[in-house]
Length: 432
Image 1 (cartoon, rainbow, N blue to C red):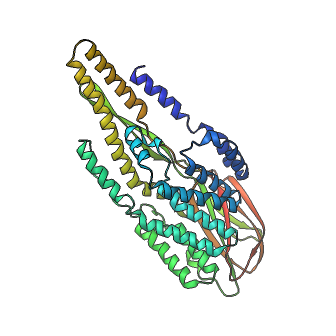
Image 2: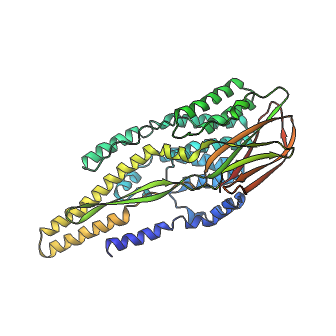
Image 3: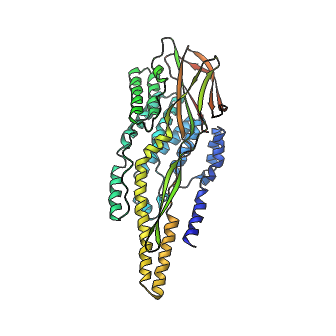
């Protein structure tokens, strides 16, 4: 089979990789999260390989959270977190195979934003279970991960840059300077609410201030104003209670392959296949909370999770780029050297070397592919808002609107107690 034809077969095969998730995605589109959990478990063997355990834990854990299965979600997300920790110190055998074939030969080790938000959603799991102290532990774990993020890949990148120079591979300038993202507004917001709910007002003010610093320090991630409701979250009048609402909308990014072929003499090429994060556009334009008594307020964007995903991916993306360049250069050089040797030989030896050269090129074409694995069900954005109310029992709706101002989804909350000196937090989700 000619290299081009072989490449086409490979492309068509892997372009269908997301098709098995179509039925689960359909349940998610309908906000049938319990149904999506059941279906994902039923089709687990066709959706995940033995190297995708982390993806399974994250996907099912997030869907279980949306379905209100908070204990199950905690168990799954914690299993995913432990697996990510273990995968970062991967075996030598798996690491060697990534240089010989591609990155899909190793266990999926998780994206940094996935590892970060595991704790945010597990904190919410614990809150819904009435375990506020455990929720705070999750927020502290998330904070520690953010602090360590800037140095996580330092030594690995340095070693890869040296190896790339030894292989005479093209090493581009580091355009991805160290990320300015060092804290999560979502983590600080949840922490502020949890501290306030437990009566630790000084700690709540510290997290509110850190939230504002997060906005100031990372304008690429937060190019919009902080939610105006923050001014009221720690200024609740005496005798009043506060209802807070956090709503998630859209879906986090996926990955697509970007392929480049660089000619090398005399008649071969180097194939470079890189994973690129791509957006999944959301229909959500506005989210409004309407109480049955007539009060209304609009939720404001707190965290663009997609922007955080892209920003935290920068260092790892460069690591992937360097490894891919090294691997592709070696594969391409092998074919080119064999071809040149074949030209210098006659008879059977030249023919054999020519066949080996072609085989090396076909192998490089077939084996060089990007690792497109990524979790599917983290939300794309987080919105927040709140209102001060007389203590009591309230019923209200959370409505998601699209561009046409027609409701995309309406969620009802009946007879919700809103207590003084307590955290009254409601969560809504529409992943369209």
